[in-house]
Length: 222
Image (cartoon, rainbow, N blue to C red; front, side, top):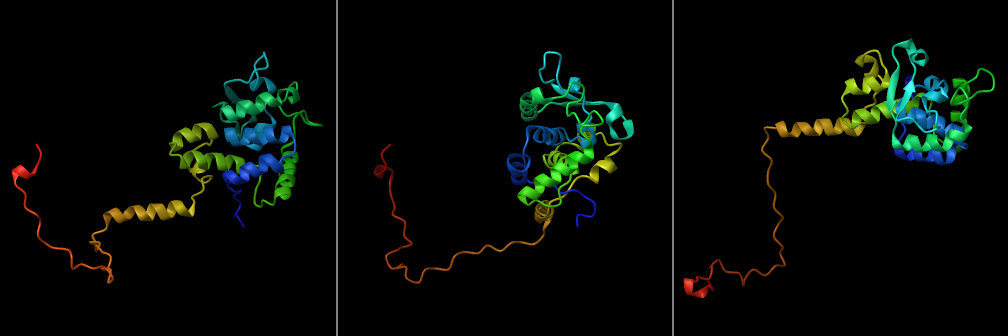
């Protein structure tokens, strides 16, 4: 029970999903777009081919998510193209649709619900539970937050209306909570005792003397 929140994917789960779960180039490219741009599945499915490739068929330096395709139709987002995503999109170019990047059978573009079914089937193949199409967006945004990226910059990428909405997406790992509490030790007024190892009972100390050999200046080579 994740209380309505999609699972955050680990690097190991991402590797397993893309290499063994997703079985065709289209699906791997679709969810790579979701992961490396933090966009919603509906935004990825409705991408125009011309918003990803220029007239020469080359991958653009930014991924354009048009205002009319965003939730709430707030603003167009221009997301810098990560090199990993550029390589993936370059390989996918021959399969891209004439109008939509991911063409569908009926409505022109791949239906988001159909994409969600493909993902469920992929996760079932490799035994990962709790994943939905929103997992890629949550994973990407959480990763940026953990990397210390300011929330205002993450909001520019995610397209959230306000920071409160964005913060609901971000997941806190138990290790982070432990580390946060551990950082308070520097405030402690308690003097920490210094413990030394007990003497070795088998060690012969009879040959040790407290006297330090005395030397004169002549004894040293200058």
